[in-house]
Image (tube, rainbow, N blue to C red; front, side):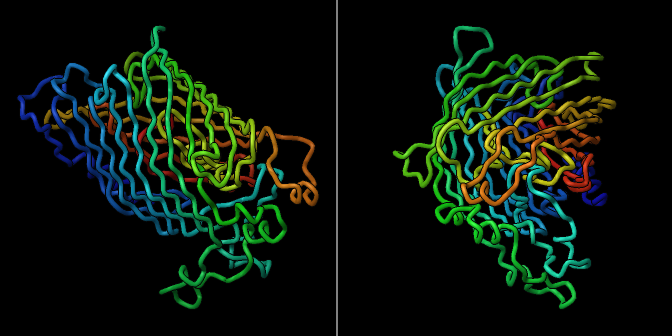
Length: 434
């Protein structure tokens, strides 16, 4: 874990990313600029990561710096727990007329053993012994809380200005197909020594299918193509790491019949983020609170973890992008709420060949909870739900290195406050959480 982090940070310090414009050294960055790093990292939920990440920025004549004209993000990576990312992501406010912003995501995502801890947070007990083959009971296996998943998606989100300052409309369309299967234990065991082979026992996902908690029509996945509509207020002074401003958005996501879907439902998502300068240029406080609710229809279980946004759809609650230190996808339900609270301190700045860098530390507290339970009729008939809903809490710290204020690589280490949520997590990621 430490070796991966040091390799990644050291590579960033040594990389010579020269703008294509070839101009003399100046305060502003101009032309094309590229940050390339090996995708060496670690996330407790998915294992060690290897591959390559390249983020291309075009700053034009530098008049918009630190804002960019175009951003193209590419990633090819794999992990030791069977995750695969193949992604091309584009973002620009200058491609379309009338300053309409477009963000496009074309991805093929594979998971050989995706975390699955049932529904409704603490309503489902977590027993670490069930995924540890070195301890009883006999039903334990490394993949008890796992299933396989493949996602193919092509999404396009658009934002345009409204007459009110900093207020924009949001519109979007997403073509999304998910394939779900039990873990292929035979495939995971290929090349393993006899002592390291995964025990072939029934997983939680298979038990949910057998008991009717996951219905026949949703157990293998399907199409969930969507339309998105909403409003966003954005007064941030810098998108990757703001020192001041507000970023609030409210949106509806529609998954209708006429888009060829296997399921139909509607979501409402409300997210508020705010940033405060405590010491100019150096120390800031940031927080994010969010709420998402299934307001109509029946959402399939495999779409519960996804949280909608005007920029990128993330997966949680739990894990690298939401509740750091808590098990990935531990907190899912028909309605969820969460909060992240973070101090960020830029403690060192330097320059390499007209490329501007800073190092930063951050400390955080994360919390989230299920506000409305999810489940089939069979689930509610057979499972006794607890009378009290309570938050899942974690805390921790992290480190960031940023190039030209936009390309940010870092690591967060979070600790779960309750052993029902796991132990801790280390995440080497691109960017800040929000």
